[in-house]
Image (cartoon, rainbow, N blue to C red; front, side, top):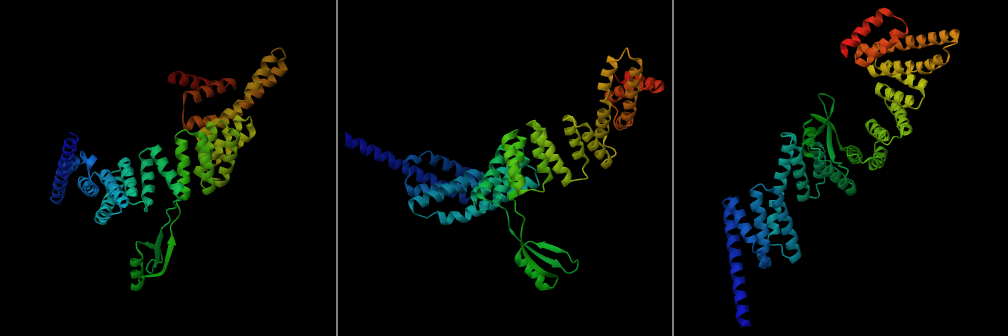
Length: 414
């Protein structure tokens, strides 16, 4: 009985192997005819029988599978089949199909990279471009630039987790993106130009149209990678991680104002306004003609009760940009805020008429000091609040004509 069972089992195995061979033959024929749908169908049928497939058939199976799916433009499946084939033949120490498959994989790599570029440049399909750029890198791991392209594309597609993974991989690999570029000076224009290849550059020089050939390394992308890691973490709200990453990025990019401002913004979220102020001071030295930087310093100082310093920064912002509406508004309100203490003192002096009158005049003086800035802010952009504030001032300084005008205006805007 046992002998019969063994014989039956062997018979089943033979049938299975026969079926596998038939399916693989059918797949090979279909690939020759470029009937890739039929080839994939045969490959799928053979794959269902892989449990007892011998090593010779396995290598052929992966070889045909890679071709069938490449023909259908199912790039990821094809790439995985090529990788599995190479690993498998290396394991069994036979290279029957690897030598045939390598040029096919090279062609697939070229096709995938060109498709990725088209998706990115022409179709603006950044998500799928990222996927294909990364697949190109997997097909050709020496070409790390494709992972960089994948990171950039993923960032454009707002796939921030994916972009962060790619950038961190690039950082761990020590990727710099430095490539040798070829330059020569155009005799006619006197301008140095970058030329695509060394051979082409040398030909131009030989023709006499160009002189002074030079080879130069392109700018390193290391600093950009570290910077992008930091900015993605900031956008994701991972504040503590972002601060650490930005500090590292600023070591790589000491002159990058935007990176400094990104770090400063994180300190606002962490409510560390002293550190924010320190960075804004640095920012004004890096960009002394930027009114927004001085305005922000005004806000920081005012919130720290450094009123005179704040007013100086608001005035500097106005000096740099005479249309800076918020600087006029904050400057006027910071002056007007002095009324609070005056009014409190007036309320305590109701029975001291001389003192009360003196304080009342002091309050009018404060209003008159603030008035030009608030008028300008209202002129640049009128809101209900600016109208209400000006109405209050005109009532205080007893300018009846303006009070009537702004009271009517305020009622019409409510």
